Image (cartoon, rainbow, N blue to C red):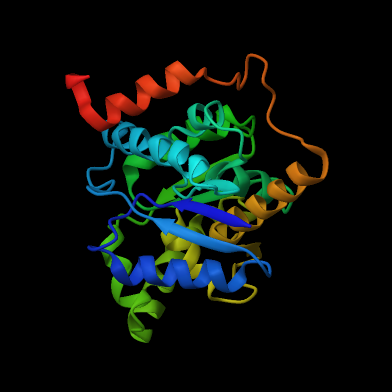
Length: 261
């Protein structure tokens, strides 16, 4: 099984994280499964709707290419899942959104979910995301670490003091959510998810912390197996009707050539 994992992080600027993520995913993958981690350059560096849309366009194009290159599944490894529905309508392979998969997994562990995101700019996005997935009444609280992707670099490069400091910052951010009623904590980003995933049985107070990196990968493996077993795929009615070849060609030409097309 070959899985394409799309990160919204620059492979050079955040190399320790990208290397750690690739090693972790391939280490926990089922026997016979390989995971290719790809970044985006420029990355999602100016947090907001326009940056999310630009990166989504590149991610969707990469997903169409991944199917053509023989990958069995594609993971949108960016918690906000921008472009998820568009890509799901463009390919036949399973398309997994880390945010979607993690929120549904977390909803099985408790009633009230608290999300810890990177930047305040994403707080409203996550609330909209929860509504889109039908979980708006379950996401009780969202709080931001107010940090940048590069802030995690030392922790992922092996600096134990930096790792402990980042875990402490995460716990301090999540604890008020638990005190306010959240009974599951979701790192709303693969960066903090990977950080917390290194702690076995990690909790904030009584609330389990969900490792979104592991959930994203294991969801991809599950959907590939279910697709192979019974041919199941997303509804091709109004929700995710397959785009015709011309629409995909027009989209890819726009990405490759811009307005010149």
